[in-house]
Amino acid sequence: MNKSLLTFPKGGIHPPEGKDLTEHLAVETLPIPEDVEILLNQHFGAPCTPLVKKKDQVAEGDVIGVVEKGLGAAIHSSVTGTVKTIGASAHPIAVKAPAVVIQTDTEAPPREWPESDWQALSKDELLDRVKNAGIVGIGGAGFPTHVKLSPPPAAKVDTLILNGAECEPYLTADHRLMLEQPEKVVEGAKIILRILGIKECQIAIEANKPDAIETMKTACAEASNDFNVTVSPLKVKYPQGSEKQLIQSITGRKVPGFGLPFDVGVIVQNVGTAKAIYDAVVLQKPLYEKIMTISGRGIARPANLLVKIGTRISDIVSYLGGTLPGLAKIVLGGPMMGFAVSTLDIPVTKTTSGILFLTEKEIDLRPYGQCIRCGWCLEACPMGLLPNEIGVHVEAGRAGDTSQFGVFECFECGCCAYTCPAKRPLVQFIRLAKMKAKK
Ligand code: SF4
Ligand code: SF4
Image 1 (cartoon, rainbow, N blue to C red):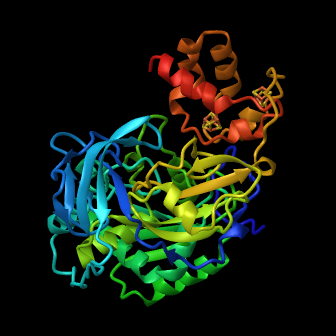
Image 2 (image 1 turned 45 degrees about the horizontal axis):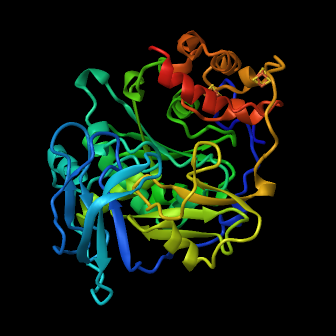
Image 3 (image 1 turned 180 degrees about the vertical axis):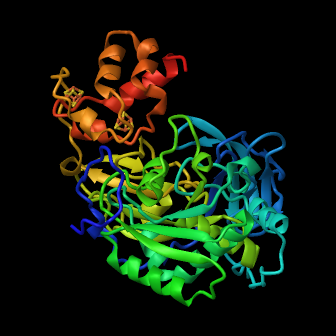
């Protein structure tokens, strides 16, 4: 390993990567399903209010939901068709959520989104296009991007980091995006820099993607450059792509415990979000489809797919030839920070980065034991927390006393649980503790 590669100083792990299943597979477009189920809360904030009613005709890209009050992002139709129902659907995290079901018009031609020049647009006009396109952080919790790109003036932001680390095992959607559409990612970065009024952008990519590093370096060099957009290779170490660790790896700046990236002069955006910003500004195309990785040894044909938002997992499984014997767990997202789901009825949202079909051989099904005080979880924790103590306190019915061990600084990366020889479900303990402890 090249010692000069950038990384964060404390903790981290190196789980088996599992990316060989899909990293060399070009993105293919999933055929449009017969109907889509578009959730109205795909973002951090309040759910959208539907703007359509049963039997309404909608075109691909039409707005179908808006947030009336507070934080949020508009929702658009991913297909042309007729509104079938407005009701409750299965949700990846919540049990049920409001949704619009649209019957697809299979004869409708795909909508065209012609290019336009963005250079003459003002900062406010650029931000409006990002907002109107309903863009959220598509690599994370779905925070509305137009809000993230409007830090308070006192923040003195001087650096944009584009996150192409993709440190979660199995996931290769960002990798393929950087290989296949590098110029759009760089153009998206330039638009963000213009909005922020700064010049400096570093595109952070783990060193296990040397082809993406070279492709993005070429794209940066070829982009007509009023800006300084460069590539920063990172050491392969999980969770290299988490915001605080990434900022420390790239800039050496440490975001305070309960602080935000702009507190240290940085804004972080995922490479997929940068591409969505390119679409929003240059094409005026809303965010209604996304590249995802479908992987694991429990699916007949792993793939990187361009999927319409609202497509059900069951439609993806059918297209890829079904599941295989030995399937033990379906995970939305990566194996470290994703969520296990028990139904194929769940629709894809703006934040679904992948779906993993994991077999018994790919997951650890051994029962967990008592804490043996080995301290491995302390060494693995990138935040310097005490997950062992949190677990012991939760088991003892004292979850309310766990803020002293840093429970609210935990971002649930799973390093502690991964490394624990007793296989203790430390992240589940932490989630429970967060519900009961006081900040
Ligand atoms: S899940 Fe939380 S406690 Fe465990 S290693 Fe990650 S940040 Fe630390
Ligand atoms: S790694 Fe597991 S067994 Fe070791 S101290 Fe942490 S919780 Fe206890």
